[in-house]
Each structure stands twice: as structure tokens, then as C-alpha cells.
Length: 113
Image 1 (tube, rainbow, N blue to C red):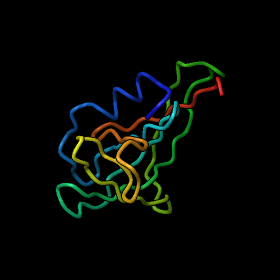
Image 2 (cartoon, rainbow, N blue to C red):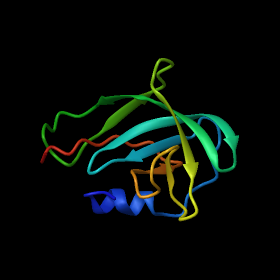
Image 3 (cartoon, helix red, strand yellow):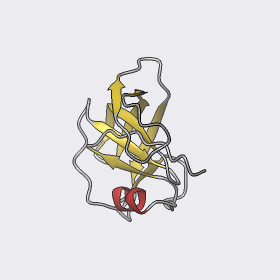
């Protein structure tokens, strides 16, 4: 579950077929984090790696945010799996945990918390 309408929409939407190098977004409570697919174990199990996200605007504490992304060879890696409810979730967690959006790389920081 999320506290953000957008994050809920993203993590429960129809997902693209994963490809190595494709962007992925982790949808947290209200924040989002950018990753890249680095390995495909099976059609229902992939490995993602955290990207470097650099804020590229000067708008301060606002919802309007621009980011630049770079691959991080030292970034944290996670295995995520496609569940029977159609959501991608970190391996080992409940299928209602943070969802992931395949095919889009987004970073967002919610300043209201």
C-alpha cells in the first residue's frame, strides 16, 4: 500500500515486459526511487540496481521536480518478483508491500513528511 495516489496507480498498472537496461521505479509510501534492470532470472523474477538520481532543478521544496539519472555500478541490488495480483514486489515480502513500475525510471521526494 502507498500513501500516494500516483504511486498506487503506478504499482498497480499493467506492466511492460522487463528488458535488461530498462528503467524501474520503486513506489514507496509517497516517495519514488529510480533503478535499472540488471538481470532477468525468469519472466517473473528480475534483479534491479539502484541508480544515482541528481536533482536538476532549483525549485526547492516543491512537487515539481526534475532529475538526472546515472547508472551506479555500486548501487544496491534487489530481486523483485511478479505476483499473482499482477504487482512486482521485492522477493520475500508480502504482495501488498511497495510495488514497482517496470519501464519507467523516476525519482521523487515528498517534502510533506
